[in-house]
Length: 565
Image (cartoon, rainbow, N blue to C red):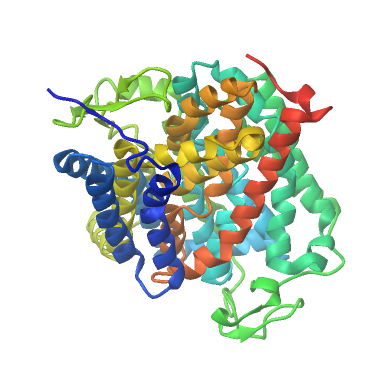
C-alpha cells in the first residue's frame, strides 16, 4: 500500500503555512465565542474547513482525510461521549428521586459558605474524579453538583473548568504521563517527578484564583486560611507522591488528603463573613435575582422551602456517588484492565489509514508510520463503569427496569447535540493530527530560540486546546519537545514535562470540555459565554506556567529543580 508523507510547510513559507494551519482553530473558537452559532453547528463547520485545509492546502489525499475524520468521530463517542452520557444519566436519576437535593443539603451541612463549597466540590472532589477517570468526568460531576447547590449555570460551568486544571497532568491514573513516556522514551517515573516539581505551585495558586474569580479579591482574602489548607495540602501530596511513590495515584491521593484536611480544618475554623450567595461576585443576572454577601433574597436559589433531611436520608443520598467513586477507581486500575481487556476488546485497524501516513522529520527524529487502531475496550471504558454505577444506584433508588430504560433514552435525546459536538470536535482533532496540520503549529513554537521554554510550554497548552486531552497533546508534541530542547541545549525532561504542565491550562478552553460543562449544567447553546468566561484565565495561567519553566531553564535556584536525562 502506498504511503503519504506529511507536509509541514506546503507554501514554502513558515508564516503562511502556520496561518493556514490555524484557520480551523480560529474559526471554531470564533464561532463559539460569538454566541451566534450553536456549538454543534460550529463544530461541524470547523470540521469541514479542516477537511478543506488538509486536502487542498496540505495535500492530504481526500480518502485519507475522510477515514481520519470518521476515526475521530468514533473516538469522540468512545470513550468521551460514553462517559458524559452515563454521568448525566446517573445525575438525572438522583434528581428525579430527590436524592440530589438531599446531597445538596449535606454539602451545605459541612459549610454554608459558597466559597468553601467551591473548594470542596470543584477543586478537591473534582481532582479525585480527574485522577480516577479523567476525560470529562470531573467537570460533568462537579458541574452537576454545583447546579444542585444553587450556582448559576455560568458559574457552575466556568468555575468547574477553572478548578479542573492542576490535577489534569496526572488524570485517569497517570495516562498523560504514560503517553508522554511512550513518545519520548523517558522513564514515566522521572517525567512524573519533574511535573511534580512544576504543578504544585499552581495547585496552591488555582484555589486562590478560583475563589477570586467567584467572590472577588476581598471575598478571597476572607477565607485565605481555608484556601491555603486546601491547595497547600494538595500541592504537598502532589509533590510527595509524584517524586517518592509513583505518578499513577497522584491525583487520587492528593484529592483525598486535600478533602480530609479541609473538612477537619472547617471543624475548628469558620470565616467571619459567611458568603451564602451562589452568584458570581454576588451579582449574577442569570440567576434571576440580585444577591449580596449575606445571601439571596428569601425564596430564591436551590433548596428554598425544602425540609431538612434526616441523617439516614443524607447517607442514602451519597450512596450513588460513593458507588460511582469506588467503581471508577476500580475501572481505572491496571489490574482490572489486565483482566477484562483480553476478553472484552475489539481492535479494528482502520483500513486505508493504519500505517499509511508517515510522520517525518523535523517533527520526529526518524520517519515512522502513524497507527490508526480503534481499540474498542468497551468493558474497561470509564463510561462503562459509570453506567454500572448508575444501574446499581437506580435499583437501590427503587427505579423499575423499564423506567431505567426510558430514562436512559431520555438522556440520549437530551444530549443529542452535545454528542454530535463532541464527535465533530474529536474528528477535527484527529484529522489535523493525521494531516500534520497541528505539527505545523508546533514547529512555529519550536522556532522561538532562547524563549523556547516559555513558548514550548504554550505548545502544550495549544495541544490540549486542540485535542481536548493532555494525553493526546503529550503524544502529539512530546517527541518534538524532546528533539527541539536537545538542539537548544535544554533538558529534554524539563520541556517534555512542560508540555504536560502547560497543557493543563488549555483544558478549560478546549471545545469538548466546554460542551461537557454546558451539558452537565443544562446551559445548552451558551457555550460561547462559557468560553468567554474562561478564555483569559486559561491564557494567563498558561503564561505563568511558561514563566516558571523559563526560571527552571535559566535561573538559579530554580535550575536545581530540573531533572536531566
